Length: 404
Picture 1 (cartoon, rainbow, N blue to C red):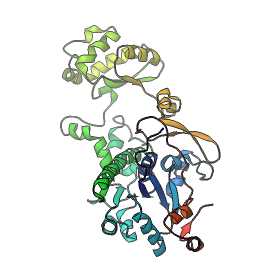
Picture 2 (cartoon, rainbow, N blue to C red; picture 1 turned 120 degrees about the vertical axis):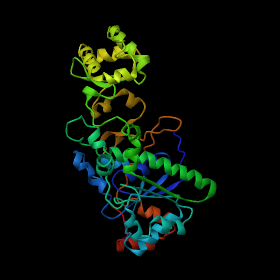
Picture 3 (cartoon, one colour; picture 1 turned 30 degrees about the horizontal axis):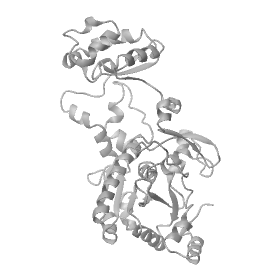
Picture 4 (cartoon, rainbow, N blue to C red; picture 1 turned 180 degrees about the vertical axis):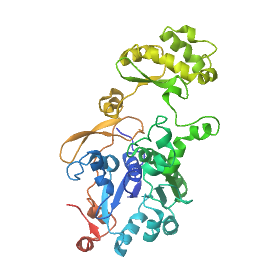
C-alpha cells in the first residue's frame, strides 16, 4: 500500500503554469488535500500544450495540464469580489499551507501577501515561487523558466556547444526542478508547524534554483574554468561524449581518473596510453584535446551496443545518449514507475512522468485527473459550512463557478 505522509494536510493552491502547480502536485501525490483555486478563465497552463502539439481539451485529454494538476480538487471563485475573498479567507482558516506563484504586487492587491495573512492566520505556511526573488531590480519582472532559469543564469548559452547558438530550452525543465525544491521547503515548514503551531514564509525563485543547479560552476568559473565548452576540448577527455560506428553516441563519465583510466585503456587494448601525458587528472586535462582525438578513433570502431557491453563489463560509468522519446519504452523508467500509463477523461491512454520521490514503495498515487475549472466548488463550500441557498446565490452571481 502506498505511503502518503501528508494525509490530513490541506494546501490552497493559487498558482499557474508549471512551477507552482508542480509543487502542489508533488504534495498531492504525497497525500495532501490540494485545492486548486482558479479564476473563471482558468490556469493558462490549460492551453500550454498547444505549443507542443499536445491536445488541450479539458474534458477529453489535456496531458500537459494533468501532469502538474492531477490528484487535486478544483475551486473557482472570483477574487476580485469581496465575497470571493471571504470564501478564500474561510478556506485559509482551515488549511495548513497557502501556495502561490502570483507576483507579490498582485497578492498585495488581493490582501493575500505574507504580511497580511501572517497576521490574520499565524498558523498558516505562506509559500511562493517567483522568477527572480524578492529583492533587486528584477524582483517584479515576469519570470518564466525560459527567462529566469535558463537565460539569466547563463545555462542557455554556456551549456550549448561552443561557437553555436544558445540552447532552445525544454519547456518546464527549470519549473519542475524548482517545484521539487519548494515542495521540500514546505515540508520542512510543516514539520515546524506540527511542533509549534506556527506558520512561516517559504520562498524560492527560478533564478535561485538555476544558480543552485550550477553551484559547481559558480565555483569553477572563479578560477580557470571557462564556458561554453566544445566537446573537442571538454572539461575532461573521459567525461565526454563519443560517437560510435552506427552513428549513436555514448557519454563516458570517469570521475576517478587515476583509478579507471588504466581500465579504459585495457578495454581498447591501449595500455601505452597510461603514461605521463595522460595518467593523472591534471596532466590528462592539460592534454585533453589530444586524448579526445585518440578516444574518438577507438569508440568509432564499435557500435553503441558493443561499447555498452565493453564498458559495462569493465564497470566504467557510461550511458547511451538517448532522446526523450526513448524514455517511453525505457525498461528502467517503466519498472521503477518513473513514467506511468495515465487514462484521460475520454478513455485514451498516455504515459506521464511521475513524482520522483517515493515513500516505502514505488506504487503510483494517481487517483484523479486534473480538476475541471471549479469542478469541486460546491463540495468545498459545503465543507466550509455554506448552505445550499448561499451556494446557489454565489453561483447565480458568478462569484463561484462550476465548469459543467
